[in-house]
Image (cartoon, rainbow, N blue to C red; front, side, top):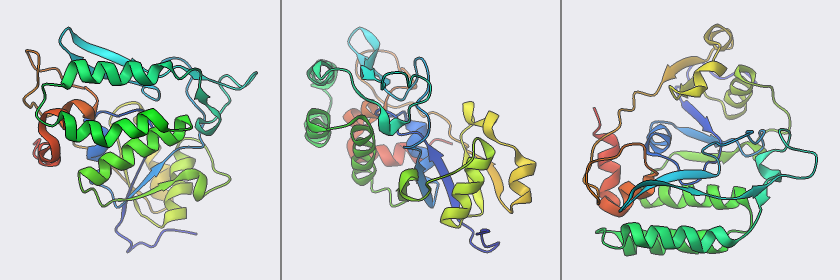
Length: 239
C-alpha cells in the first residue's frame, strides 16, 4: 500500500528505551503516529535501551537494568526476547529516585505514577513501553502510539523499515532524530516512495533542577520531578 499524497501525517519511530530523555518525547509530540520498534534487534553493548541518567546530590548517575538474552542469541535477539537478568534493580532504582528527588516539588505525584510499573512490570518491553505510555498520558500527548509487532510481521532494514512502516500506517512524512538515526535515512529512497524526510528541531531547554548547576540530557524523570505537568510547556517552548 502506498501512502496517500494527501495524508499529511507525520510518523516517528524509536526503540522502547528506559525512561528516555526529553528529545524522545518531543519527537512523539510532533508526530501524528509514533511506532515503538519492539520487535527489532536489541542493540549490542551499552545503549539507552536499558539505562538512562538522573541527577543525584553527587551529580548525574546511570540507572541501569541488568538484562539477559536467550542463549546463543546475543546480537540477534529482539527487544521482545530480552528479559530481566535479576529483579534487584527495581528497589535500587526506586531508592536512587527517592534519594535524588524526595525534595523535588512533584516527587510524590510522579512517584505514584511510575513506582507501580517499575515494581511490577513482568517483562523488559512492557516496563519500557508502559512507562513511556504513562508519561505520555501525564503530559496529555495525544499522538497515536503503536507497536511494530502489532502492525508488521515482516519488514526491511534501515530505510526500508521506515518505508514499510509508513506504508503500513499510511503516512507520507517521516520525522527523524538528528543523532544515530541519520545513518538509516536514504532520502532519495524515501522520496521515491512518496515519503518526505524531516528532522527534529529539538533544542534542549534549561529548567530549574535540584543539586547545583544545570545538567542536560537527563531522563525525562528529572524534568517531571521538578516541574510536573508544566513539563509539557517546557518541552515545547525550547526555541
